[in-house]
Image: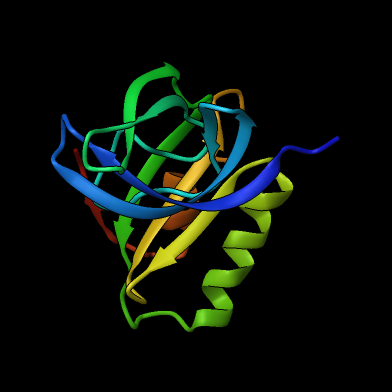
Length: 136
């Protein structure tokens, strides 16, 4: 049976950030990210973590128990290409077993399996696309 997907308000004491995230609940206190948290680079697609309820009644990360098995990269998108053209790349990322999301209409996060042979940089070069990469 597939783990249940829930929306969780999550406080990260280390980063001092609270975010509303969709996660898979693996056990009573263990969850897996099914999206990327834009402002907390520790919480990327596939990351598993344990929580507790803190004194303020918030779900708080206790520890990351498994880092993501995906390589995560973030880019600023430009108006150079149409949304439909970006979607073609996103569909290929999904076919390769990866995940992608766009936040605020212009920040793309790409998650590729570590063993994936899809070369994002080569694709960008082929289409003369030079997006600014966001580095942690």
